[in-house]
Image 1: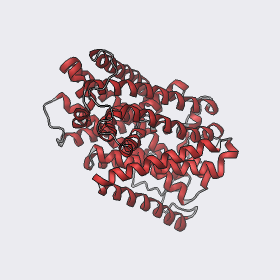
Image 2 (image 1 turned 135 degrees about the vertical axis):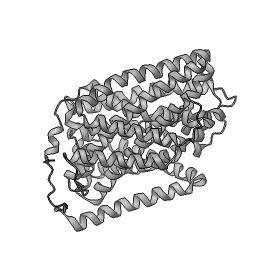
Image 3 (image 1 turned 60 degrees about the vertical axis):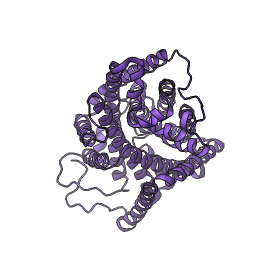
Image 4 (image 1 turned 120 degrees about the horizontal axis):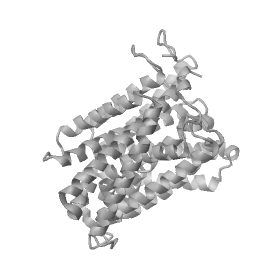
Length: 446
């Protein structure tokens, strides 16, 4: 193995630290970036969309848990794919889809940071300051990640407590202002809702939970990984479900669907205004800043690990471009550059759409590999895995149908991107084989 793996410290992540990392990614992107986006499709049923998304994510998590329990590895998703499909174009392509989905998630979180931060000032939401702030946060995440695992772990634990506590305070205060009625502000609970729209909203809501996959990338760095990887995933999903539901009911009982959609990029800040006025907005923005920043830190950490592992597996090329340091430091640079470009040129809605499509396609490929190749080896129940595939396919098709009717261009971009990834992987593996490193003087030692 390459020497960049010396950075992987066995048993360096406790169960609590692993849960903090998983919830850090999920809550950072999910509740602040996606509440309004989901409501736009699911109408007043958007809290139910988050519940259904949690159920689908629970079925999805089953495959990851079964494989990770038997084969805990810092390779995470890349390891699962390689065990199912070997060193093939499917393995490399699907792993890259996951990596791109995570990078897309980083740009989503970064733009959410910019959008919420501007609520402190009298600045239009489409201001050029949004991408500038987003890129600034991405650079900050890069600096912290360069500082190393211990700094990341310490920051993750502190920010996880702050943001979860802050979000709970926001939800409870908003519900208190609404008299704890748990009633929608809209008169009709099915307002603006349709079956296909609800499923499309659910597809986006799944992005709020997909951070559980970063836990599988921690692998044998987790204490007692054969048990604690699965436990951390389950606990993280449950914590996020409870928090998301409280927030959804708080927002839904304070604002009508029309108001949520109008303020979809900063819905929580807008929901705080009727409850406790401008001070509520400031408090919510502060929590959003903490949540998005910590979520980005954890995500950048995870995706750079995945890309480094794919390099070790000879599934993607690598070039130093004169940079010092080891492979993971280089993949960290590539990650933040890609996230910065997306944050600069795509809005929240389009970023979320790309992320949902890439993630669901990759997830289906994972489940199919477990079903066809690994289920006996890891003791997976085929009915659970088949159910996960069906659920993914249904929400993916519904999302493509709905999104294609109002933004066909982003569906075409996603389709071209998926085809290009697998075509490139096929080309790369066919022409490079095991000796895929033509970078003169390239080593993994940094």
